[in-house]
Structure formats: structure tokens, C-alpha cells
Length: 79
Image (cartoon, rainbow, N blue to C red):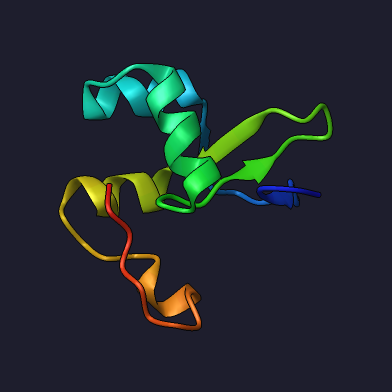
């Protein structure tokens, strides 16, 4: 699936674009653009909606570079 993974069963809470937007104080469309650009990883629900891992979002809020380990070329996200 384009732009994310399919949701797997997990105990981690998943946040909607609106919830992430509220934490970063931006518009939900901005969060969707970040995901499309690869600046924050997202997963997709079976219905095609984006969701974001709560732990990753909070790490980004703390200024941690959580995507570097997942990127083969080592580029850092620009959130």
C-alpha cells in the first residue's frame, strides 16, 4: 500500500492526523503532508486512513530523531 503500512494488531495507541496536529499545533493537512513526504511514518487502517504511533509522535515532540534508524541513507526527518 502506498505511503504506509497496513495496521497490524498492536497494543500501542495510534493517533489520528488531528490528534498529532493538536500536539504540534499545526493543521491536520500539514501532518498528512509530513507523512506523504516521509518526515513522519504512518500506517494505514484497513479503510485507508492514516494513523501515527503515539510513541514516535512523542519522541518527535521531544526532539528525538526516530526515523534515522529506519532510513537506509541516514537522512533525518525535517518535522
